[in-house]
Length: 212
Image 1: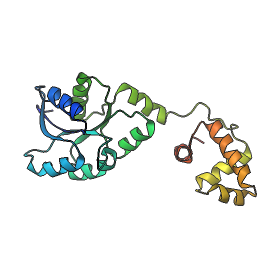
Image 2: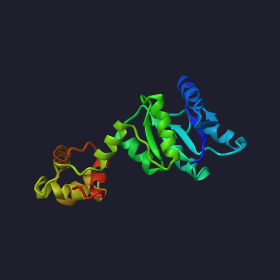
Image 3: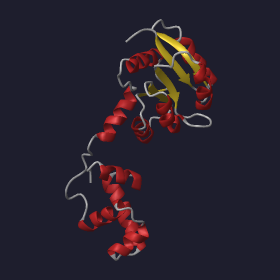
């Protein structure tokens, strides 16, 4: 890895932006080449940058195009850049979506400035920096649930799950299985409780990973 690492920062909060810029750009290993308050501003300034950034710190919650929605576009424009998402959010869904969309790492905004610097350098080396809280959530997301047992669901409940995985609505599940809609909804609530899921999306995710 050659120093200094070229760094860009997209952050809409002026205090956070100046704090990160003031600290990171004083580090001898780093050189800030672009600072923007939005993805739109970043893309507008990008053609004027002599050398593209090697690492981009990207806030998820931004005015206009969000950081999460901008990931595919930024990947297309800057295929070699390492993108570190930064946010106050630490929920598994956002983390999973960001990583699937091509993020190199994920740092929470309560991280120390030293941790930010370490994350940037790790990403520049080809690593995948993550705050400890984020790493725990990622591991938990892919860890098979201890509650998954062959006899956890009844035969009828498994039929309901299969119909849901097939994309059927409650009404369509009722029609397929010869049940009332209210009975189906009762089964769904019971299934959610047993599998410890909160939505059809989560149920589908578990099914896709072979955890049902």
